[in-house]
Amino acid sequence: MVLLDLTPGPMTPSWLPLLMVVVLLGLIGFLYWSMRRNIKRINFDENTTAGTTTPDSPASPLE
Image 1: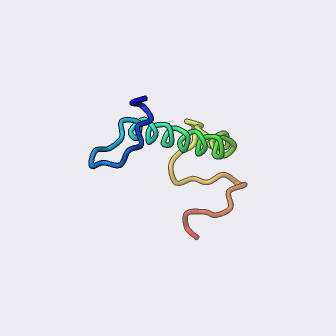
Image 2: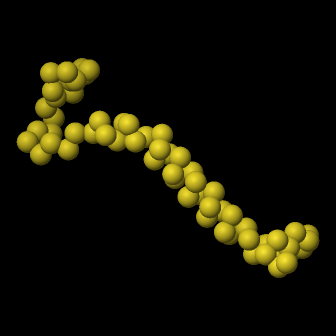
């Protein structure tokens, strides 16, 4: 079978790019899965102005 040709040689195996894509997609999926709770915490409220903090903010810009 040509797809799983593991003989040593100077050429890159034809399945290596596919394996790299699968690994990268798996890594992106894992990062999204681990960050999904923090992504939900982001507030995209358009009424707030830059530089102002909310009362429950842990630090102000002047500190």
